[in-house]
Image (tube, rainbow, N blue to C red; front, side):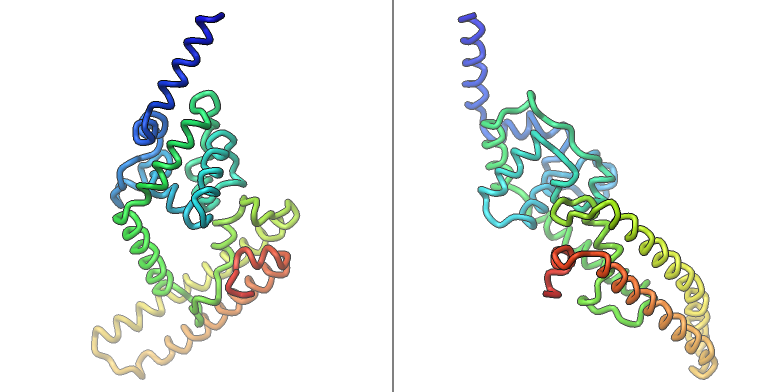
Amino acid sequence: MKNTLLLLATTATLSLASTGAELLDKKCASCHMLKSPEFHELPSLKAPAMDAVVFHVNLAMDNDKDKKIFITDYVLNPDASKSVCESNKVAQFGVMPSQKGKVTKEELALISTEMLTIYPHKKFVAMIKEMQLNDKVNALKGSPFLVNAEGLPHMTKLLVENWDKAALGLTKEQKEKLLVVRQETLGAVKKIKKQIKPLENEVTEAMIDREKPKSVEAQLIQISKLKFEASKVHLKCIVDTTNILSEEQVAFLLPFWE
């Protein structure tokens, strides 16, 4: 018995003697990429890179004490509702398995300190900002809506990102209603975009052929009508969605609306 206790004590001492960097490599690197990922590597990752993990933790919390408490709790008691990542990312990677019995709270204290010290790398943050900017540009280019202001949200996208978060707290009944709104919205917009595309191609080809603007007036009028209809669908989605949500849930999704 004494030998067993001595062995456990020795093991604990050795574990605590390890540095945060060593523990990070030993306990986390098998799933989470520790170097800053290249853009082409993102689709093949089996779990979020450590850069991404800390990036989202930083977005969700302000002080290091809360961040360390969260990291320890999530590693030992993971749950989709606790995740700081978008719900669609959780769906992509799955919820990490609990690491109880594989890492101690003392080790996690060292690991979390190391994580918050070195992550996210500036290179990763720059890449994420560029990706977000490209997403905005592409969304604008492919948008069928007349109004594309920052303050006019795409509710279906926001909900997908926060669907399972405990902080949003959607009930089963709310989810059922919101799924109907999402299905109706995406179906209607997809149908309209399908009609707009060939009309825009006709306008483009006419300009390449140096035809007069008057030659495409009919197409422009039809495009305008279709975008008007798409915009109505967009606005209806916002109204229908916010009517299903509580004031607190709307404030969570759209804090700038307060």
